[in-house]
Length: 62
Image 1 (spheres, rainbow, N blue to C red):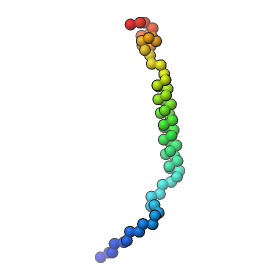
Image 2 (cartoon, rainbow, N blue to C red):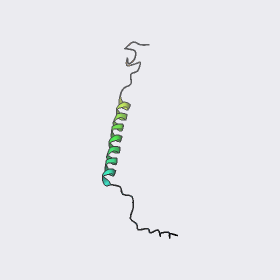
Image 3 (cartoon, rainbow, N blue to C red):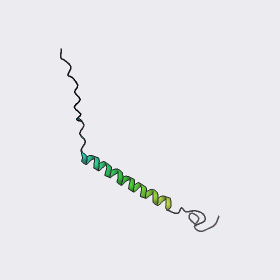
Image 4 (tube, rainbow, N blue to C red):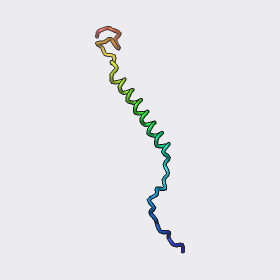
């Protein structure tokens, strides 16, 4: 019968994450948030076509 190996905690992580992958992920997230924020700002500050400004009615009052 095979003996169980003892578990030794060395404090060294066995998961390897490259710093380059982390920086690319951060860069893509920041870029996405910036583009989404600009699009939200443009859509919130643009004037909607309303009846008073002649948007959908071509200047004709209702």
